[in-house]
Amino acid sequence: MIYLKTFKLSDERNGNKNIYPFNVLQNKEPDIFIFDNITVLYGNNGSGKSTILNMIAHKLDLKGKERDNPKVVGTLDYFEEYASKCEYELGENENGRKIYRIPENSRYIKSEEILYEIRKAQQDAVLQESIESNLARERGRKHAKEFLETKEGGKQFARFEFAQDKYSNGETTMQILENNIEPDNLYLLDEPEVSLSPQNQVKLAEEINKMARYLGIQFIIATHSPFMLGILNAKIYNLDTKNYEVQKWNELENVRYFYAFFKSKMNEFEK
Image 1 (cartoon, rainbow, N blue to C red):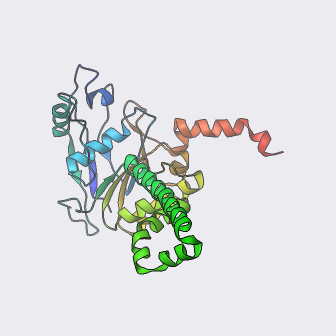
Image 2 (image 1 turned 45 degrees about the horizontal axis):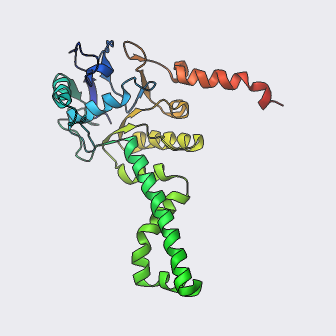
Image 3 (image 1 turned 90 degrees about the vertical axis):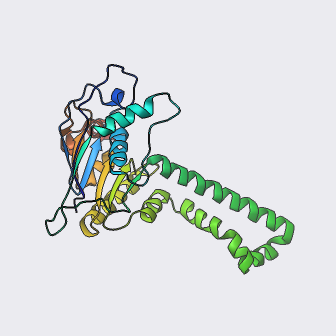
């Protein structure tokens, strides 16, 4: 399903190179972004991936949107100025009829949110271990175990048990995304592979492919992970190019760097 069909960044430019978001998007001549079921915004640090997702989220008024720091004098006005000049077009439903609004549960999920949830799960897991250790010391292991099995003990530790499950299975990011993604919505994901091993990055990309195909979900994803890029059935915009060119995953600099590195070590793998 295509909920957001196109997005055009503002043509406005500002002479002050330190003003956000003009400073991030200067010296670029992008055309209109035309989105697929899954669209990737690829680029190295500073390429504007998160800025563009932030702009889209702000313009569409999505849950999870963020604005630039209002404590920095004047920046909020510049952000609003830039956003006001951006344009977008919504897509069509499965019957070919024009969509007039983005589904209300659509959301922008940032890497900072995922990292925060991971830290919270880790802290809860450590706290649980500490409390259990203190209980065992105060009541003895047998009585501590009996207390945890009571209704009162169960209620007190429900939060920690859930947190430790998430923390110990090594797939906290996967669970966070699963808990926040619902069918028939648009999701902007900012580096969702954060903290995931290569194996789980591949698994996440495979799940995103399935959700886009079977659950009517549209994804716009910022990433430079070669593992995600190689698996996602996505249209890829290379933000490192002046015109934000559409490229194949194996043409991207980060991916080719990985390829060249492992190719140079090929003899070590073939021993």
